[in-house]
Image (cartoon, rainbow, N blue to C red; front, side):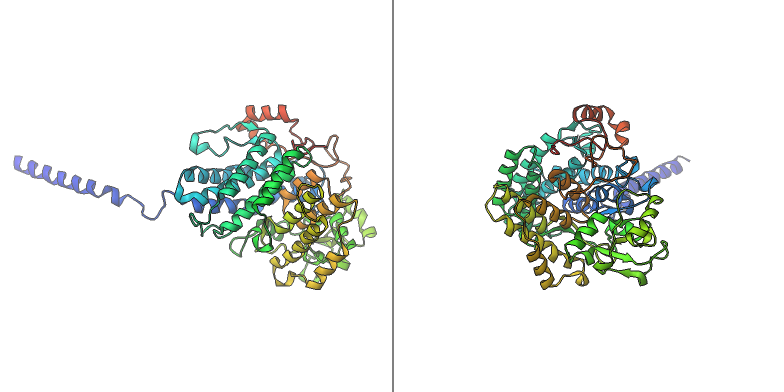
Length: 512
């Protein structure tokens, strides 16, 4: 009996030893990654900045585009916003949530893990530049925001980040962009798998300095001395100098442009080009109109918007007037020459709203137009008129990015540029009105530059239910209600400092 127990004990010991010796290897998933290379995380932060599902686009659709009167909807309820100058909590949260939960968290991680790593020198600078891009969008939208402590929930367990003033944020953004752009070095690490420029350091450097230039120009009214100083630095560093250097996210049939996806699917019949935008393009015989616009001529319902009715002929385009809901809009039909609201002009599903349409962040055209303004202000040398024409020409040529059918003929481009010189006494209006056209579908930048420059000279939305107080236009996107739950004390401090958490409160650089 004792011998039997002894043998059993030995067998059990051998079995346990055998299992234990292979436990780690057997129970380790060799396929599932335990960490991600920071260059892949950078790509994720770039992709997330252009949204990854249709509802992510609701803020630009319901606020940014409507405020600047390019794209509107007559419908209320879940689609209300700038079309009625009203606050709708569900439509102001998207950029805050997408950027803080994804873009900021991801790019902060890249900056952290590459700090002090000489083998990741250029990747570190790229991450700093993209981080500045993301925070510009956030602070331009909301004003004072979480900044230094943002995105550090995992890194430092900061779950209630403090809000900082927009003035201090811009001071740091200018510093970061200047330092990171200057530090990019073609002799150091190659980041060939990043999706913005494929690791081209020269293009990243120009992107960084062009973003620095844009940031400096934001301060043109509130702090012109600082604006001029950093404009000078950005120009000396080297700006984007051709459309081939545009900062652009490219899409495909698998990785969609989600503004396009949303407007081509569930919201296809709900959004229309606004009358001020269409009329400006028509009045000026702008060849971009046929690229931007399509009308389902004679459509009497959403289902009547068929391919057979589509026309991009500039002569038949009719923009939807501002200030109407889906009931009162009926009173406009006879005067405007349409048979229903579905008969108004829409953004072109065959060009700018293709599912693989590119998403432009910073362009040669925008940069040249801002450079024309800087030259007009005597902050840099150069001929404002020549720079203005170069910026307009660049955007006309940029239409080719939407496909061969969208490319404008050289003679049409030449004629438009010749027929629309920079007018004496109207320089700032001409420059920034063209910037409005050149930034079509770039919601955050449209909203920001409209407030900064005061152009184009739009008439206020006459909708009778406006909630604005003391302002003709929405000046700011309020903080989302979720902040009341997760970060109320810090948010309240910012509201006390900045002003009421409403659509009417101006951000720091939006000086009257």
